[in-house]
Image 1 (tube, rainbow, N blue to C red):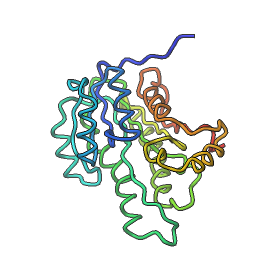
Image 2: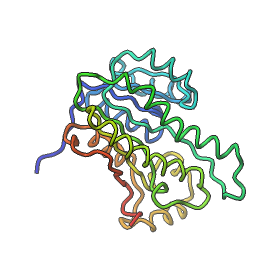
Image 3: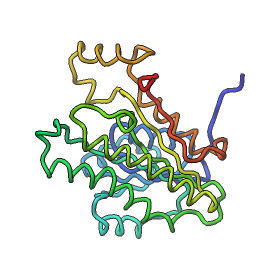
Image 4: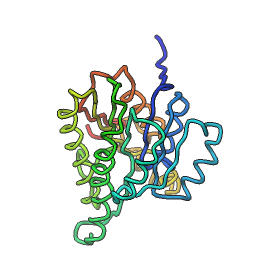
Length: 249
């Protein structure tokens, strides 16, 4: 069996929320595969840390502080892009978890504006910045398993992640003829710095709900995105790839 390897040496990838968590793993994975990566993140502190940690890839990197909810912030970042774009990974997102009865308008608006309107803003703003000569343009949107089956205390978050799926399928139909594929990745319970701070018994309880009996790794999400961004995935369009150990079954 031949090992799967990816070569993105002639590609430019934009990763929103790319300076921390799953986004940082996406950034490093594409850098390791030879891509140039544009890292957009809301947190300047996270950007500064990422820039230090990724120093050896300096020639392949471009960083910008971007608020995806603000179109003027995006316009500034888009104007400053040093390269045309081949792949966009819409990863930026937040949570404001509360039961619906306790959820405030502020909680609702913040999550909708970042996770859904932000997705629109980024994709719309970058559409004309894609490499016009490429027949392998990629948009990959990070959804969530809660967008497929809901979750207590996450009405706002689940609504946005379900919206991501509808957005993905619609753009797949509209942009396919223009050389794009548009797909979504729906992570399940993934180990991050946030989950690592949880008590062991909580993590064990989460893992017990998953058919494969473990939490996912950030590598699992990065591997899915590498594949969907590759030329090997050129006939996959409008799909939702659940990377969740089977929890949606």
